[in-house]
Length: 120
Figure 1 (cartoon, helix red, strand yellow):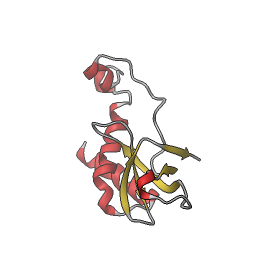
Figure 2 (figure 1 turned 30 degrees about the vertical axis):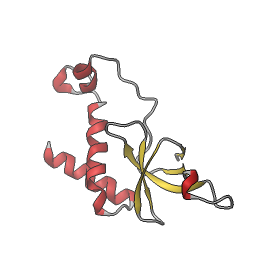
Figure 3 (figure 1 turned 90 degrees about the vertical axis):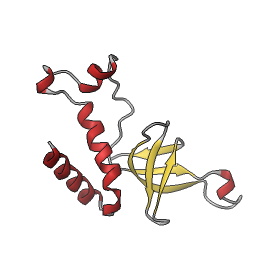
């Protein structure tokens, strides 16, 4: 299973043209999707449904590395600055609500709840 995960992470990073420093976030995303998928070993059940005892929701899922416009907080912009910045979606918050994004211009990781996805 470890080799399978590494291959998926490598493929996703390559296709997204993301730096290797985001292997951890990509790994988390791969595992997250696997846990929402049917598992033959579990009699075609979804692992998250078995572990948490709740029906699984898929409506929040987004395409990895899709373009997103993230709201810039008021304290980080002036009146004439743009209100959003274009980023790349790289995953979901682990314990907190929201998503993780990579800002290629600032070259930093951003967490936000205020975003608009542009999925192709």
